[in-house]
Image 1 (cartoon, each protein chain N blue to C red):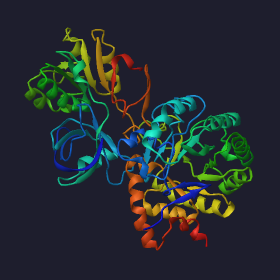
Image 2 (image 1 turned 180 degrees about the vertical axis):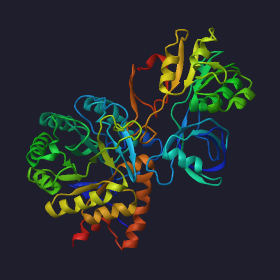
Image 3 (image 1 turned 30 degrees about the vertical axis):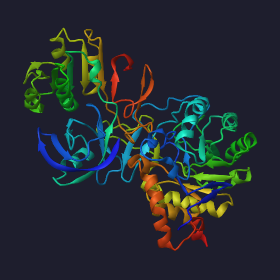
Image 4 (image 1 turned 135 degrees about the vertical axis):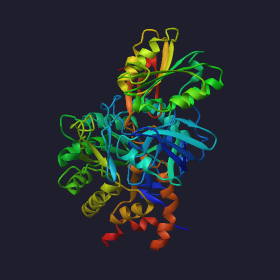
Length: 304
Length: 245
């Protein structure tokens, strides 16, 4: 019997599989399909202070090995989520929930996290300083180590819950940003958010996505995410949630070997709504083949 | 919604770019005409959403127009091919709101869901008039099938090569007593039908580029008078009074 449990900054997950923010809503649609309690956790849709309508259509484009999206953080706002979604989450998932929190100012990040302080199911705050599809003063907080550290500090001061900073790959040195977050008190990091990309329609000669650019995700980005998790593991001592193109239990194990303590699964859910459930079911056999009794042993094993 | 394997039983070419596909499989998740399926295709990351033309307990009929790589791949499948299908997606038409004599208005490949809809309305004792628009007579398909259902059939083509010269709106104007429409077709057609003063109400089926097809990714949301709605989950059928053009 393989032990699948992992620990994220003191929060025990029964397995390392976590549906990634933005691909799982607030759990409602998937709860119609399977019992979400098989999951280690889930990261809810990026939630901002005010409700956001998101970007104009089209928001989606396809590519070989993946997709692009520019949804633009459409969400009902933190107060509506606490009022309407949290009670429903209590019914469909009894495990620890990761609350993905967005913001357009340092104060907004802190205020949103403060509002979640008394929401019991939320065990980890995942602070999104990396959405490529919104333009807050033209700059992501996640692109500059100093800004990333400032957000981390402000959020840490506003909450007693573990704080994981969600990082963008659209930087020269992601390890530097991760280190800045660690030094500012982050309990962990989650990487990667989507890579900035675009597609152009040959007929109209215009970008397919109305926002022009979108975030690239899917199996094609897996090696990039893996490399970045590797680099960050070398640079920090806080736990890493590995995210980016994970499509199978084998990918999840590989991500852990690179340094991830747990794994988020994004685009794969959109192609196969049962992707995470299937991964959880297949992980024990993958571990057995690898001769591993406790999956947590895989974390960073490729570095040793 | 259900995820299951369907087997392609046969494919029939209807026009230069339009095909009828019959698949066998478990259709139990399909609850209303106007719903759609989302089909996984080899080599494509995203599934392809296709409107349901008709269904029985164990068979699914689709009309597919080749518009890109995915649909090309789909119509190339040979009988016996197994396809991974999410079935029973979307809200579908609400026949109970349509009255005794609604018009079913379709343009091009948008006529697909109207076939299963017409059949079920007739079974319920409603008497729909079917108005179909095509660019030219050569693009027209499924006319015999609709006629065989026994409903009144009106045809319009843009060049007048078949039926009346004009648009599907001209067909609807020819039925002035009709005050309720169920429509599926290209956006300009939907907009023109929506603007007809004779209508007290109607249901309009929308298309969108979708990520998941089951309401999770927010990839296909559109503004309505009732707030933002997901075309895949809250639609694809939107109601006359809520639509924002």
